[in-house]
Length: 387
Image (cartoon, rainbow, N blue to C red):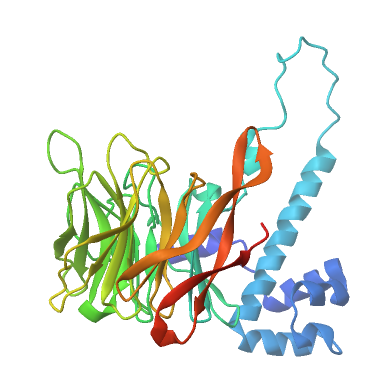
């Protein structure tokens, strides 16, 4: 065994502990009933014993991981309780208001708090990002399988975060064969495959990537790219296609100061996206665009279907049936737009409700349903929804 492996083993909090010792200590601390509630496996709940539980845990890696995790949690809580018990009572200090040192530190409040970020679902699997203060704020891509197994997909020092538009955008996308993410250090797109180490897909210094979606029909990613490579002037933002074979990029959409949220229809034949320009912020005014994806991967003539400099459109998405919908802000007269087979019409009417807070109207959506046979491709207004 190498010196590095030996040192790593010595740093492992479970080093020198057998599974039997771990389980015995857990049973002594929690008891079988509480242990069976915390980790719901049959060997903890049906006629439990150390021997039968060990037999199951040695054959079931995910259950063993849960047992070891609970053991480490128990040890941390015991250590914290011991430290508190050994701390002498604080001497009462009388001082002017605001001049004393508070025992409530920022590290005490958020030091072990995990921040949950972007979420994605693929079949029965769930993916999300976790911001971990104990790792200097590193964002980790986490996978939860349909049967409840948890796994970190991005090892340190990789950090899943985009800095497009400075405040970022979508930082990962997942498919059935691979996943992709933006790494904070270089802002390049990286690829994850089962059984392989993550690898950089793009190699474009000075360029940032965000909001990637997988275009399986053309074997590429479609994403927002922000080009900071020029020595002076403002960054140039475009929507690009990135080949999965070699990471080469092709500009698909340009001409506005900002772009976000490219979304491909389920059949791969249309692309929707948002754009806006200075001096607007995205909550001031954005525009929703739609274009056909041609056989060679380029786009047809874009059609603006909603939004303006005074109306903010957000969250464009496609239904499984291939209709594109988007939501407006609470601007007076704003409409939710539905586009089916290239035809766009209002699908939701917004109106101010009687509930107002701080002088601002709260808007409630009118629900929408598709009318008639699917071939009709029309939408109709339905009854109001409750908030």
